[in-house]
Length: 181
Image (cartoon, rainbow, N blue to C red; front, side, top):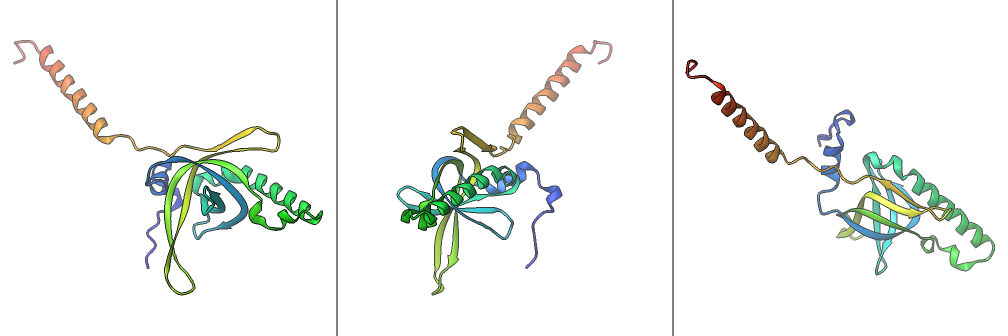
């Protein structure tokens, strides 16, 4: 199979975001569980829970990956607090899925199909994160990420350029004297 991916040097924010955010971008409250992984593109994938208790994957991709470092650090500290609580005899903290960090994610939904043990395709949901907000240890709200780059309306730009050329042509015609005609 041929690799049709562009070299990283040719990827602009507009090209990246047009590939990541193909559907409507919306705000989704998610409780992130400190379980991390990477996909084949090197994106950060974090387990999340949305109401009414559905398990999803939240993906931090591309240039937003660097900004997710503060969120990862916050979730690692949460995981260490849970481990300390479990050592002190708190039974609820023995399960990592009980450790949750509330995060407001602005992103778009993507479906993922994977075969299960019997070979059937199972549909799961991924939330592609563009921006996210969470509360740090000091109680301050931290906003990370950036809104998706939106393409310029090329038709509108071409129409504006055509109107400008027409106005310039009319101005040149009007400026001509009868001797020039």
